[in-house]
Amino acid sequence: MPTDQVCLGRKRPLPSCPNPLFLQWLTELRDSAKEKGLKTQFVYQKAINSLKKYPLPLKNGKEAKILQNFGDGICKILDERLQKHYRENGPDAPVHLAPSCHWNNMASSKQMEESQKEPLGNFSEHTKLTQKEVRKEKGAKKKREYVPQKRSGGYAVLLTLYRHIQMPGSKGFMFRNELQTEAQPLCEKSFTVPDLGSKYTAWSSVSTLIQKELVKTHNPARYSLTDQGLSLAEKLDSEETGTLHEDVDSQDGQNVVDLTLEEEDEDEEKESWSSERPAVALPVNQARGLSSELDPMGKSQTSETGRTAMGWHLSPGSYDIVLCVDLCETTGGSSVRKQELVKELQRNSVTFDVRKLNVGDFLWVARERVTPVPGQLRPPVGKELVLDYIIERKRMDDLCGSIIDGRFREQKFRLKRCGLRKPIYLVEECGSAAAHLSIPESTLQQAIVNTQVVDGFFVKRVQDAKESAAYLTIMTRYLQKLYQNCTLFCRSRELEGDGEAESEKMVANLSCSLMAFTEFNYGAIKNKCQTVREVFARQLMQISGVSGDKAAAVLEHYSTVSSLLQAYDKCSSETEKEKLLSSVKYGKLKRNLGPALSRTIYQLYCTRGPLS
Image 1 (tube, rainbow, N blue to C red):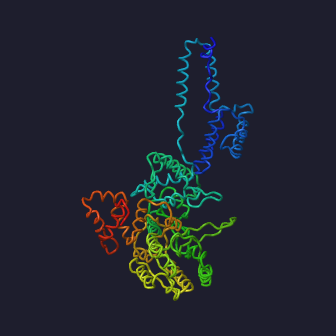
Image 2 (cartoon, helix red, strand yellow; image 1 turned 135 degrees about the vertical axis):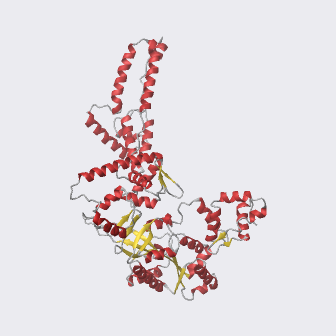
Image 3 (tube, rainbow, N blue to C red; image 1 turned 30 degrees about the vertical axis):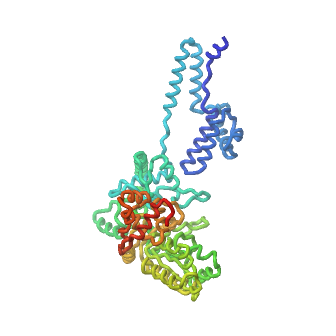
């Protein structure tokens, strides 16, 4: 019967995609872009999804243009790959079969021809066996293990984290700044500056490491290795160490540096080395870099700008003290008045740089001196460390406006938290202009006194922009003299110490620990992504009478709104809830928050209706 013949007919299994070669090439392009941290990986992924849905075979890349998400660029790449495929495998090479599947399909077709000769009774049994073989073949394909390319960003990050946890006394994780500093010698690309024509740096590959579950991050941002990342990093480190040993063995005797000194010179060399740099355990890559800075006799010939295991540093004479002026101080508003300040600085021969500052109006940086490279248009970008002095400039009319709209208190709070130990308020009296403002002059004078006495800022009063420029000139020359013989070390913002005494002591000892400008400016961004704790602090500071110190004191006991509400729920009576925060200590004098403010905060967070 015709129906029986149709039921007994054998249909050849169709491949999952009629264009496996194109699918394979697009997958390779996507994986390559993903490893480099390029956003074109998403374009390739969309093209792959469209290709999988298309049921007909394609002869060339040009025909694929009818599909969604296939543009001229992708079609051109497919045509180039196709021509290369024809050159390698001949003009009659199969296009709609993957190279690895070609011989398998030929073998399966022979099996099918033999199976047609078998009785029909064995048909169902043979079909089951074939399906099992197909399942086994599919199951046998294991996912390829991700291994970052040598000297790439991911490679450098894995090696650095692994070597850090091998050091005695390691805390098991690294902050972003110190991780970038330590990993830079192992990577060909920069972790902070993108390549020309690209917006991605070597740090972009960290997202891939997190996605592959090789690196885990914490809050606040700290990076450490997972168990899978630890095993991979151990393999990479053993390969790197083996390569280093081969390179050292292959060198000529005259170029090899023997770091093991003779006994009679050993004590003398140890003393000189300890006076120049702190004694630290150097990883293999740093020991190799160190050997290039030593002559065959073992005497140090370090460059002016060096690196230590704790981070890079600037030696005396290798940097200049430069005044940084906020962009808003030179543009917008009364341009004539703002240009007057710039002209006065130029007239006083002050070296300054106009840039965007996320906090403050003026600060000083120690900028590394760099020599131009022959053949390059611009000299290399020098490293910059921020000195511990920052200035907020206020005219009396600006001070009045900032008090009215709440910016005055917020700016003081951000200056305290910016990481620089010596904030300065520069107040321009502007003659009798204060008498014509919407706030009484006595209130403005009281605000200035509170800034100096209560907040601990140094307040400098001047009459006009000319005196402001004179003060900036004097400060610049004072700092140039103060730091002229100091060795400046780079420290992370997360590891910063508090107190002015520590800073003065370090300067007196001819060494100082400062933040990098890029990290400082990024940490001072006003509208960056905030944690729950930071949002809670901003909420508290909107309450009348809650200063930055008071908000910080509440956060020490209750870091989130949820924890505060849970504490309220545990109270047995309404009176106890109202007085929950009254005994919280704040400020240097450790005063109580008080029952009135405690009641206000309780009513704000626990009253369901409108506040009375």
